Length: 86
Length: 156
Image 1 (cartoon, one colour):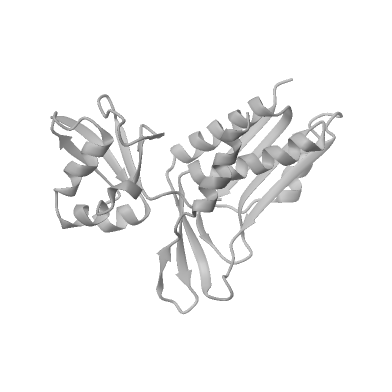
Image 2: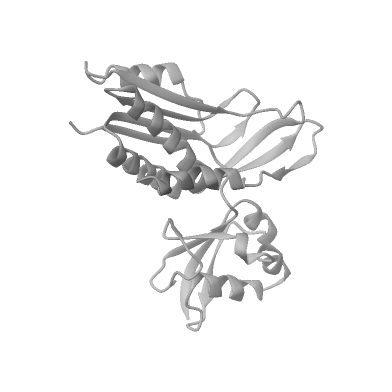
C-alpha cells in the first residue's frame, strides 16, 4: 500500500464530491490507467467520474502524463477533464 | 541577452496597454510587440459569466514550460503571459499574451504558438453561469484547439 494525494478538478471534482483526498493504493495498481480503474470501483461517485476514462486527463506531480505512466514515487496525482483555458 | 519572461496566474484584471508598453521599453532594439487578449463572451446574451477553475502551481509551471518552448523557437526579447481565474463577466479579459522581438514575424508567430499551446496544456477549466440564473455546463474542449496545437509539431 502506498499513500498518495489525489486532486480532482472541474466536473471530475463535482462528480466525486471531493477536491482532494489521501488514499492507500494497492501495490498492484501501477499505472495512471490502473489507478483510474481502481478508483472506479470505490463507489458510484467515482464510477460516474470515470465512466468514460479515455477523456479524463491526469498529471503526476503537476506534469501532464499519459495513461500508461507509472505512479510509483508520485506525491500528487490529479485527474481532470480536457482543459478549456485561454 | 536573456529574454525577460513573466508568467502570472491571478484573479485580478490586467492592463494590456501597460504590459505591452513595458515590453516595448525593454531595450532600444525592440522593433515589434505583438499581443493577444482572450475575452469572456455572452454567447448572444445566453451567459452571465464564466467561472475559471485552475490547478494552482501546475498552471504557472505549465505556462512557463510553454513560454520556454517559445523562446527556443523564436528570437524573443520578452514574453508576458497573464491568465486569470475566478468569475469573468462578458467583456472581461481572461488571458493576455505579449511578445517582443526585433522583427514582426517572430512576435506574431510566437503569440499564436503560445495561445495554441495554452489552450490545450494549461490546466484551466471554464464553467458557464447562465443569464437566466440556472447552473450552466462545463465548457467542452474543442478538437479544433488540439488541431491548432498539433500544427506546430508538424513544422520543425
